[in-house]
Every structure is written in structure tokens, then in C-alpha cells.
Length: 68
Image (cartoon, rainbow, N blue to C red; front, side):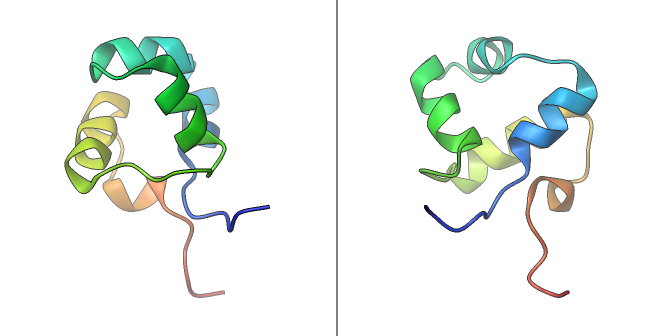
């Protein structure tokens, strides 16, 4: 299992936005978003910034903290 790096899936649930809706809003394939949400791949920084803007959160809220 890959290391958990992002919290995008959690934030989507909190905001009530589906992975498919996010894919449309950032013009990415839904399979790409699924892979990102499952931490199998990570978004480019530009996409991470766009996701944060769409979800109206600080970009840091989309990442898992490295400090306990």
C-alpha cells in the first residue's frame, strides 16, 4: 500500500463534491482523480493549487502532515 500523502478524498467528502465533479472542474480524467484520491499517484503542484481553490481550502489541508 502506498504511503498516504494527500487528504483530497477526505476533503471531497467534507465538501460534498464527487471525484467525477472534481475531474470535470480541473479538466482531468476521472481515473486520474481516483488514483490521486487513493494515493496511488500525486497531483502536480499546479493541479494541487487548483484543487485547493475549487474546494475553498488552504493547500496545506490537502496534504498529510509530516509532523505528528
